[in-house]
Image (cartoon, rainbow, N blue to C red; front, side, top):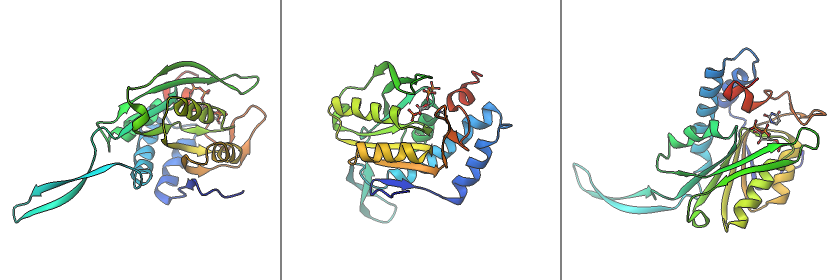
Length: 213
Ligand code: PRP
Ligand code: URA
C-alpha cells in the first residue's frame, strides 16, 4: 500500500499482543472493553508526543528550583465517534484527565455504508484546542472523514485521529482527504468484505463493547 506522511501505523509487539486477544471471538465484553482502553492509552502516549501545547513552570525540588515543561490543562478535546469511540475515551483520560469530551454520533447505513449523523455536541472553544478524534475501527473511512469535516467546519485546525484497526481503503481515504490531520492506527488489516467489515478485523466494535449482539 502507498505510504502517507500523515499516517503512523504502530506495529508494536505489546499492542499486537493485546490486539490478538481483542480479535478473538471468545473474548468477553469486559475484557474487550478493558483491552480497547489499554491499547488507547498506549497509542495516546505516542500520539501526543508532538503537537501538545505546553508551558514552563518553576518547581522547587528538595535541592533547587528548576524550570519544568508541563502540558496545558485545557489543551486537548477528545471527540469519540459514537458509539464505539466511547470505548476509547477512558484510555485517553488516564493520561490526560482534564481533557474535555465532544461527541459526534454517526452510524453507517447498512446498504450504502455511508455515515448518517444523529448527534453532535462539542465543547466551547474547541476550535482553539488540539482535537483527538477516536474510533476503534477505520473501515471505508466515511465516518472518520465526516467527523473530521464537521470539526473543520467548527473551525478546528489541530486534529489528530486514532483508530485501533484500519483497512487500507479507509487509511488512504482519510489520509488523502485530510493531509493536515495526523492519523494513528495500531494495525493495518488486509481489506474490507462486501459488507464493509474489516478482514480479519474483530467484528462489530460497538456490539462487542456494549453487548448489543
Ligand atoms: C463503526 C465504527 C466506525 C465505523 C467505521 O461504527 O465504530 O464509526 O463503523 O466504518 P467506516 O470507516 O466505513 O465509516 P457503526 O457505524 O457500526 O456504529 P456504532 O459505533 O454505533 O456500532
Ligand atoms: N465497523 C466495525 O465495527 N467493524 C468493522 O469491521 C467495520 C466497521
